[in-house]
Image (tube, rainbow, N blue to C red; front, side, top):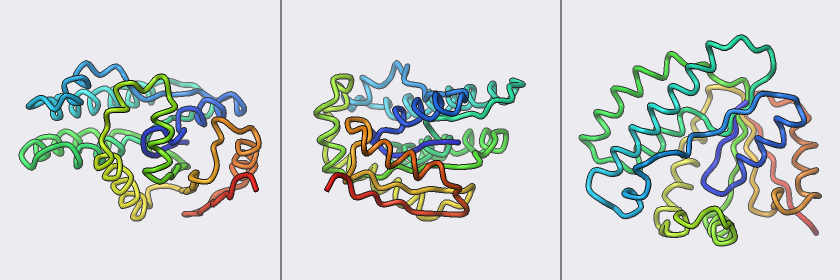
Length: 206
């Protein structure tokens, strides 16, 4: 199972909760990218260095995992295709051509999840969560325009996604990180089977 969505939508929190409840292995996205500070400072060439570092790190992480013989279910708080979403946003045409050569080499070697949970939220909701998060000091500098571009890129990608069963959850009206009732609502839906592409639009507290 993979959980995806834009920044501060709650994918890492949900992945930890599900892994604990299902007694599953948890694979967390790489955050140790030494080029991020230069990227946020918009230094020349930093976007390409950031993207290639993420691509190689995520590939190694998922590839090494496939070599393990562990029968427990696996929950990952990212989808490998996520890397390509951000590459298309951040790289110039010539850089993207180089990136794509590596991506096309790596992707066929990795397994596809049985289920993807895509967590949606509006840019305004994500901005509020960014401001509240004490662990996101550098992320608070993300511009509104870039945040909107990220949300739009995710929407475009998952509108066409057919690689596995997909549950699209709109979290704009709920906050399962802060409100226990919202979490229970989401967990009840996740206990039900998902076939093809399905949508879940919880309304939050009345």
